[in-house]
Length: 422
Image 1 (cartoon, helix red, strand yellow):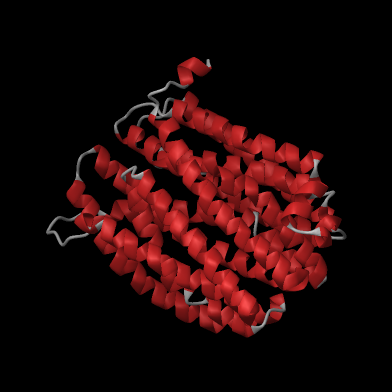
Image 2 (cartoon, rainbow, N blue to C red):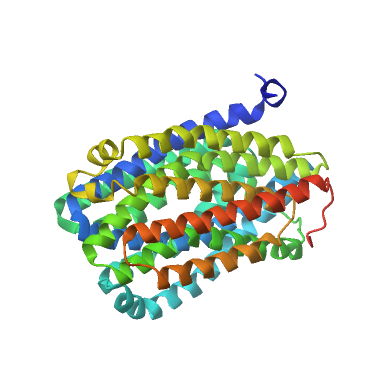
């Protein structure tokens, strides 16, 4: 079976190795950034930083929507050898999303006092966070172009540069006394250089042209992609918001640390989804089967996740002492549960991306319902941190079971058409 699925000339294996390796370096830098913050900020301040990062994840959801849309249509235009349309797509997207970012920036300034009161976070931290909306707009457009063109080396370098800049600048600013604000400033500053580099590498694709594209098709695809990625992101951010609201700052810090360690599974496997999506989109555009790509991608995710899970369940104290310090040993009994939940969520992302690539969108309604169930469940049952993690596992397991069934239905139906209504 494996010989049929994999061979030495398989581009999926090659591209996964390129991007997984790059992601490992990038994620290592990102992880050491958080590790530095855990040790230098303390549990209470890191709990606040964890919530700030949850806000960034939510901001990143629409940014990932932009990247996913750019990837999807760049892949389609590449498959049809319509390079001029890629040019128009990148230029129009850049100008349009900068305009929209201005509106969202103003809205964010208005709601900051409300967020500050609800989350018990100083307004200064949130005001520094607001400009990230601007910086985050161009990054997904350029990275989506790299992804859609399957230029995974350039994408990998871009990710690595941002991560290491964030680590170095963040460590310096926090060390000299900027505390949480230093960490947020590092994210802002580290976003600029990769954008400039990407612009130079893609300049041949963003020259002015007289060609046009059908924007209605892009808008039609953007709404379900937006809902899908926001709901998937909310699975692992809702819990952090509610824990910050219901528990003490120290407990919220413990939970944020456990959540971060659990996300090792997600970040280690993220590259697999980035490689899979443009390939399944291109095959679908050419009316070819992409089932093998999905199966291989799921196998890759399981191979990456399994050893991490075993480490979390069998040696939680060792992991916590090495990565977080003795202060966070109280979460040793729930570390494995965090990793398991993130494995379910990662597989849900992969299945969601696959269905998006073959224009199947109805699964998003179920994800919205599961988000609501997660909020209700944590609202009703939050006597301990373990109780919240168990709820996260149940909700994420339900998501993977539903998405698995939905995907099998589409595969069995031999989907080779472009009808997005199913």
